[in-house]
Image (cartoon, rainbow, N blue to C red; front, top):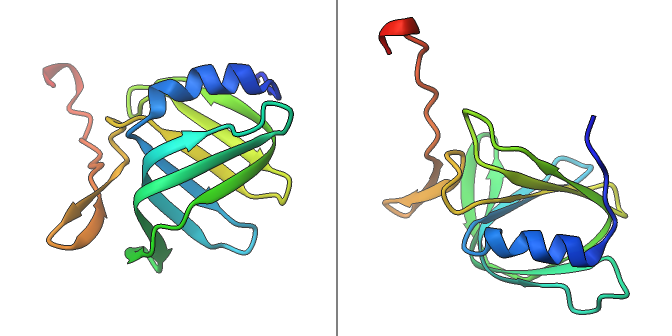
Length: 135
């Protein structure tokens, strides 16, 4: 079971490690956006709001990532929790917005991050087969 948090200062302290990483937002109606974080801020410590600006931003369409204009996103959140590092991924922050959207902050070296290759954005994560003790 995860511990759910509302504290803005705790989030601000933890987000420092995610600068230069990626941010994903998934709407209730299935729209998914992901981009490289240029900068983020919590402009008012009295409000549960995180602002994210992007270097680039993509929208997911049928398994393909299409580049879109990188507009800033304001995330009005209800609560968040920290996802621990696992063998297949780095530590993450998962946030639920007041509108029911799910957001995630990814570290810069997360293996699931999108990478640009020949003007196309692709996930760079490739699951390696478990070769057992000889691996």
